Image 1 (cartoon, rainbow, N blue to C red):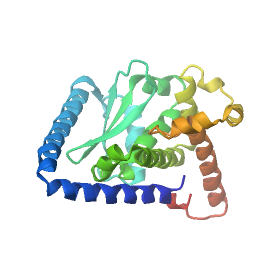
Image 2: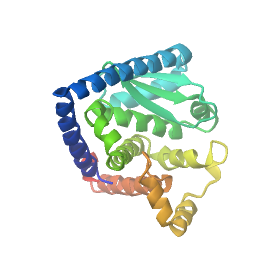
Image 3: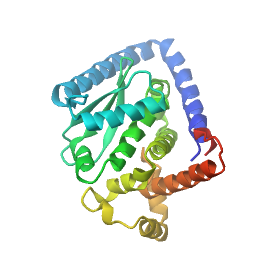
Image 4: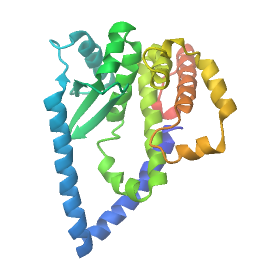
Length: 257
C-alpha cells in the first residue's frame, strides 16, 4: 500500500472527526459526554506511562549501552532532534515493541524477549523492529492520532484500513534502516525467536498464496495490522525498489512506493 493511500485515508478520517468535534462542541450532549471521556483517556494514558516508567528499565549509555547506541544512531539517521526514550519491559514471552506518545513526548517500549534475541542471534532483526517503531513516530502517526481517533472509533472499517496503511509505512522505515533484518524480523513475529531462522520465507509466501481465501481477506478487514505474509511481500517489493534505485543512482523517496 502506497503512502499516498495512507494520506488519503487520514484526510477522510480527519474530515469526519473535525465535523463530529464541531457538532459535539456546540451541543450540550456532546459537552456532557466528550469532555469527561477526554479527561478519562488523558488520565488513563498518564497511568499507562507511569506504569511503564515504574516497572521498566530505561536504556541509556550505561544501561544496555550497546543496544542503546544502535538505537540512538538510528534515531539520529532518521532526523530526530530529540531521541525518544526507550524502555525495556517484561512482556511474558511476547515478541513485540510499540511506540507511544504522551504530553508531547515520544517513547519506545521493547519487550525483553525481543532484546534477548539481539544478544543470541544478532542485532539486525531487533534493529528492524526498533526502526519500525521509530518510523511510526517519524511519520507522525501518533502525533496526529487525536485528529482521527474519533472517526476510527465510529467508522472502524475505514479506521482499520488507515491503521494498516500506517503499519506498511512503518515497515518501510524498518526495512530501509535495517534491510538485513527486515524479512527475518517479520518472520520472527510468526515463528518465534527459536524457529524463525529455520523458516524458508519463499516457501512461507508460497503457502500463503495457496491458502489465500475469502475468510483470510475478510478477517483482515477487522484488524489493525495487515496479514503478516502481506507485510513480508510488501517489504520484499520495497527492498527491490530501493536496491534498483540505488543501482541507478536515484534518490529514494518514501512517498514513491
